[in-house]
Amino acid sequence: MSLRARLLAVVASLVLAGLAVAAVATYYSLQRFLTDRVDTTLATSAAAIAQTPRAGLGPGDGGRSPPNGPGGPQSGPFQADDLLRLGGANPGLYVGQIATPGGAVAWSAFAVRTGEQEPSPPRLPALGASAVAAFSASAVEGSRRYRVRTEPLGGGATLVVALPLDDVAATLRRLVVVEAGVGAAVLAAALLGGLALVWAGLAPLRRIEGTAAAIAA
Image: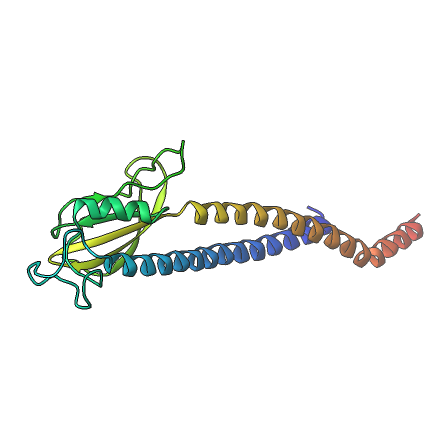
């Protein structure tokens, strides 16, 4: 391999390494940022949903009446009608409830536009005692990913809200495409610039080589 080729190979290796490190750091930084935004949205939604009045509760309902009067904040498990109502009132979210620790999730319907198919709900790990938690989960069917938040409701029940990560995945895919295009352009520019610099830097050696050849002749 000629000296020129070796120098260009070194330049290309350094540029590729720098681009790879920058791309990976940017990808995971953006992923974390977008996930944090989703978690904030879920936390806000979960807090609002947890304070939604339960169906059929009012004064005299076993001490579960709202402390601020009918329609105020309440606690305890939701009824089936509550989940249906909450699902329609929170488009884009799966709203569910685990009635007892370790029990199955009762999901609301997922509000979709006319003609669209309801997505498969998230597959949750076994959940023990109710507690605030946020985690990612795959759909029961298909490759869709969700961000899930759980929050205690009282009475042993746990609220579950889940938001599809479709927008996050689409944004990260676009980032990869942009990074690949920019990386290819930067690498090409670096190689062309390196070739020009190497050619200019080796010019004295070429003149010396020509002079030596002329003397030898």
